[in-house]
Length: 112
Length: 115
Image 1: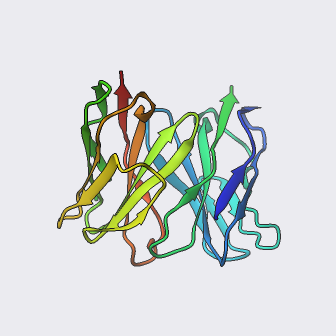
Image 2: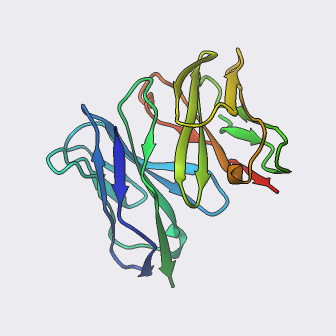
C-alpha cells in the first residue's frame, strides 16, 4: 500500500539556520504530495503542495520539489524563525476519492 | 469563509461509555474525513464521507462509526470506549472540485480522554 516516510525528529535548529526535512513516498500512479504543519494545540494547516513531477510548491519561505525519480518531496527553508517551531507532516493523495496517507511527522524546534 | 469547526473541543469519558463528535465543514465542501492522532500511531485515517455516503474506510474496529448529513455536517461515534481511544480526533473537509479539489482543510480537533 501507499506509505510516506519522514526523517525522525525532533529537529532542533538555531534561528536563521537552514532547514531540510526529508520525505520519501511509496505509491502507485502519480500522487499529489503535500506538506502540512501543526502548531501546538491546533489542527493541521496546508503549507504547500505539488501535483506532478518537477512541480515546486512554495509558501512562507518553505519550498519542496516533487521528484518522481527519487520518490521524494523534501521540505526546505533558507532561514528558520522561532515561529516555525511546529510539527511538519508530509502526505500524499492519489486523487479524487482517495484518502490521504500521512508520514509520522517531524517536530521542529527553533531556538532564538 | 469560516473554517472547519469541531465540537466539543475537549471531552472526558470513562471506559465503556460512548461518545459522539461533531464536525461542520467549510461551506460548499462535500467531503469530510476523520482522523485519529496519537503520539504512538501518528495520524490514522478513520473514514471519509461524500454526499452522505461513506466512500473510504480505514482499518478501525466497528466501534468507530460515522455519518454525514445532507448539509455535509458529519458526526463520528465511538461506542464502548477503551483507554486506547484517548486521542485527538481531527476532521478535515475537501471541496472535491476546482483548483483545491485534492486539498484537505482541517479543524482544530476534539481532544478525547478516556479514564
